[in-house]
Amino acid sequence: MAENKLITPRKLQGFWELMPSDQIIFSSLLEKIENVFKQNCFVPLDTPVLEYSEALLAKSGGETDKQVFRFTKGDNDMCMRYDLTVPLARFVAMHENELTFPFKRYQIGKVYRGERPQKGRFREFYQCDADIIGNGELSLVADAECVKLFEKCFKALDLDVEIKLSNRKLLSGIMEEIDSSNEDILIILDKVDKIGKEAAIEELKNLGLDDKNCEKIINLTQICGKIDQILPKIKNYSQNELYQTGVKELEEVCMYLKAMGLDCTCDLSVIRGHNYYTGTVFEGFLAGKNIAVGGGGRFENLCSYFSNKKMPGVGMSVGITRLFDVLKADGYFDSQKQSETDVLLVNFDETLMGSLSLMNALREKGVKADILSEYKSFKSKMKEANRRGVKYVIIVGQDELDSGKFALKNMTNGQQQNLSVEEIVDCIKNDRM
Image (cartoon, rainbow, N blue to C red; front, side, top):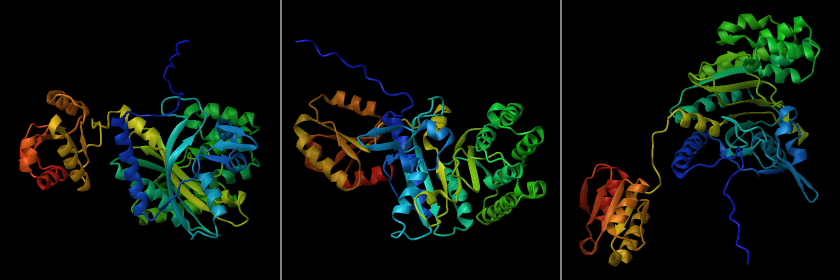
């Protein structure tokens, strides 16, 4: 019989997995963000990873179409979700008669994009989304609420984020004025920072724009500052009706944000990559770094692909995978916690049954207790406790079981005390030793 050939363990490029110590940190970040969503009255939702292609690609276009993971199974043409917003629109359209509006939902889950893996870019990554969907209309207060919610997420993570705000109607109005509806213009403008102004102008010329119109649209994206500073510049930049609507909306959202305690920077170069955005758009950057870690905006017409009713929406998303990757590379996380265990029971062979009873009693009182049940020496078990990075150890001998007092040892500072079960619970929960 031929020997089985061992398969070399490997994973696909761009797909994420963490060691337990990192996963513990990452999970804590997700929990903090989820708590912010709950505190701000958003309800949870979880949509399928797979969607029918006709639904997921209803309004994608551009680079997104090239990045989706698409395949067929039998007669079904399917895609893996590339974001959480389009599935939300499909869900709302399916259940519009069962929901109350404005519908405020959050979702934390993985999305998939078949782009080239590189630093800060993955093919599988988490998004932390929150959206507000209206029925017929949706106040611009919702736009401000999503921007403020974005800031709150980073405050919960003890991080400063610089938020840059704009409105897509400004650029859309200029495009109307110059009589161009080519959405490739927005793709070019979205990467001016990467390729430079001159290269962007050349690409715009290749789309048929003349020098004057290239300068007009590029110069608009160079305007940046507080709303009071830039308002005189942008009010008379164009008399196009759509453009002027964008100016008024930008000013109104900034007014609501100030009432909520947030004074944003307006940066008209912010466009956002997805072409379903129609009004307010914003991006967040780690303070002191030119690294985008999320954003969002308003999508007035997305649900129209699934329903005849007008259901405008606005949302925000934290790119938590990229954020974690950046922070880890910067040495932001100093925790070396290897497990979720509060205390490890180190028993002798003859005290295993009593140790199991003690472990169960501690767990029922909310202490995350574990046991090394293998028949190994006391010394090897203490070494294993150190290797796991567990802070507390309970030594369980027969005398301890008979007396009901157990030796609790702090592995960090070496302190040790003989305590009852109730005292152990209090000591561990309040970190008193």
